[in-house]
Amino acid sequence: MSSAWLVPRGHTRIAVEGELDFDSVVPLLAQSRRLFTGQGRIEVDLGGVRRANSAGLALLLEWLDQAQQQGIPLRFHNPPEFLLRLAAVTNVGELLPVVRGRV
Image 1 (cartoon, rainbow, N blue to C red):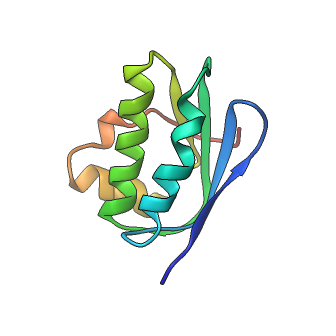
Image 2 (cartoon, rainbow, N blue to C red):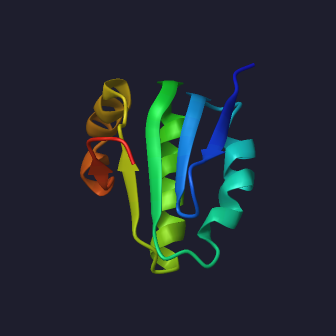
Image 3 (tube, one colour):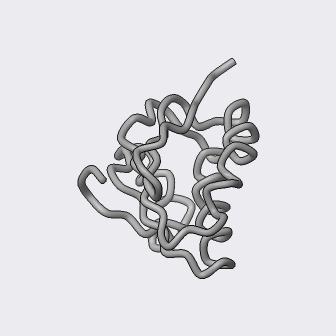
């Protein structure tokens, strides 16, 4: 079983640590729901993601969808190269608002 967790880095910033896979994304999604309440923007640092599969990519897309539904700008910082390749091969890379550099 893998694990991942969210690390608060201020009011609108979080860091994701660990592995984004089928075992970890459901708990992360539940934990993250409160992030989309009453925010002006959300900055997500993915630099601590050690591994990810399609479930991890689906989580990022779900976060993006939730943010867009509430009119909250969301940006992903420091996505690992393997995650960017997965997004590109599945034709969703252009959907992800990626910023190079730490938040």
